[in-house]
Image 1 (cartoon, rainbow, N blue to C red):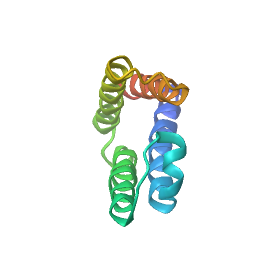
Image 2: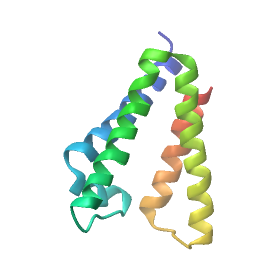
Image 3: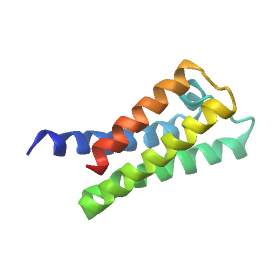
Image 4: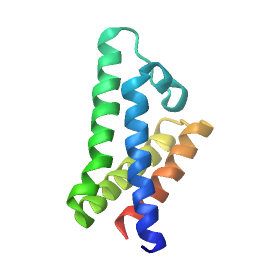
Length: 113
């Protein structure tokens, strides 16, 4: 197994871990996203979208292979592009936002190549 394959597996597992954290501990999400839920409905969204979707996106490549890794990578790159726009347009230069952007670009590139 080459290093790129290992990095892709790590990226997919990191996606799953993010989803699991949101599913199991939705109140921890504000610490790394800035999002907060004011009530049960918001917590449900964090669990389902941040949790369920990220778990699915991270698990599917293990079953579907190369194309699914690339789709996950494209997803990260689009998120990074929109985040970059938002950082400038919304003047959201928080360190955590910049860190998220860098991580999304790195994961996206690893998964697409």
